[in-house]
Image 1: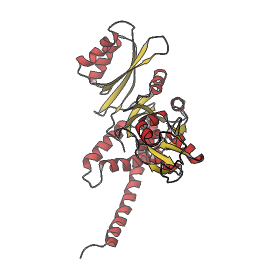
Image 2 (image 1 turned 180 degrees about the vertical axis):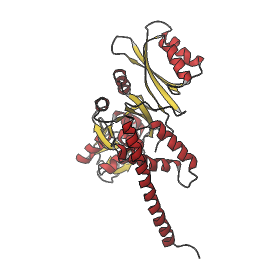
Image 3 (image 1 turned 30 degrees about the vertical axis):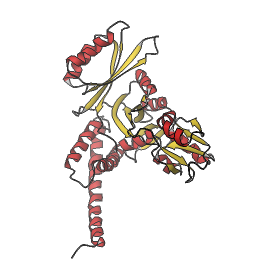
Image 4 (image 1 turned 90 degrees about the horizontal axis):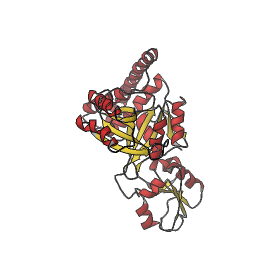
Length: 362
């Protein structure tokens, strides 16, 4: 006789009882690990261990659970494990429901303690003074390019990169009620300048006469739209839920494959996982061929350089800092050898992070 819905629900109830019991056993083991870490003065967060854990779980997963769903579920389980060892405070670019906030929850899970900050420099400062263990900052967008302010702050800080997060960025038009966008009720739109730039064609074609006003974040734009009559915002679906707004036009970005890379900053130095990235900062002498000489060891040793950016040093006119991302870990023999050779041609060089490469978003 075929099983009924009630039969399957009974099976699910029995499985849930086992899952809850196993989760508590897992947290008990995590708590004991936390005690050992405290005795040995080791950090709670171990990104390299968590990366290997997720790789192992992914290899064990035979479906129908998707890889993304597994990652999201375990993000919260891992966060609960960290919390039972020591509560983790994470600074992010606020207010609540910014893309940085969403990226932070993707990485740390929703049960971590998130502390919103009004600017990227505030995130660095809170982590530097120990008010927060970690911070999450945007560093580059696939369409708009590098967030220069983030790079500039790495010049002066001793903080390091512990992880990277990639997040697909999608923009919605939010309003206080469900309305036809051609009704004339929308008089003003708030958003971040990058969001306006990423929706430029859509705005031109659909709301060419509406006034646009820049905001420090898309979430702040959504908050303003919830408070001011006749005002809309370009922001995320998460912001719509947070500020009780309606999505009157979804996915209005001009380029569908819009990705932002975020960095997790802190004081930890993750161990090698075999799938890592190293970020360096260096300053060359102001002379012909200096940059070529610095980068030549990378080519000689077959090291892949995945990013190179230059920024004014802010200490001397027409002198530049270079930021380079390499495939590999600073503890790898080839990377160590290359860095030693590069130093000979640099006025200054430092590594500000070796960390697991991200495999995508939750």
